[in-house]
Image (cartoon, rainbow, N blue to C red):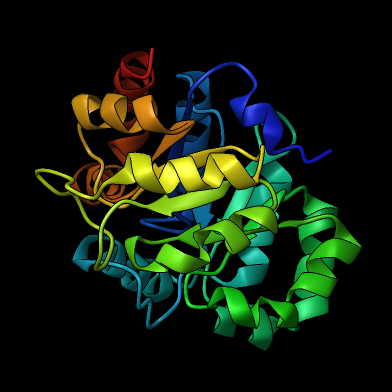
Length: 256
């Protein structure tokens, strides 16, 4: 049984995204712990990449700051090893295919299992190309998490049927970033998912306010927030974890 299911066992899940190493790994660790203490059910950890195609300017900026600060995949594995001394919620990496390839796919996934990473999201790998990663994910017990976008239409059922961990539903077209409103007909997408799998689905891209999170959780099993949290790290730097804790508490409360 996937450990990721634990995140959704107690009701609607709140899932923060944090870029590892922005401004440094010590702050990342403190931010993760603050988020978990304030109700985060699962944490997405971003491994920085120099050309993050799915990201808007906020998370792109975080990637570049982290890389300038000397963060490496090995150091991020070390961070997870440290977090796992006391953090028990599921942890999922979000990164790009190149990061995994350059580390060595099997080595990357075996290390994920060793340090306690439960899932992997690769936004630049289309569903049809996941076979390059799937055998290693299965061998080492790491869920390869699929994304469903508004453009997935006729593929939603197929993606849902083969889903692992949870399904990441992309709320709107384009890159990550906060949006004033989300207009996609998510309930229709979720309905197709529900007809084809019992695996939970959470909505991400563009959610920043408690009201948006509540609305997304009404139609799905949880809400994912990235840019709004990364903005706090950009604004407050080493003092951001306290702000992140307060933000997560407010967002989690909105999910009811």
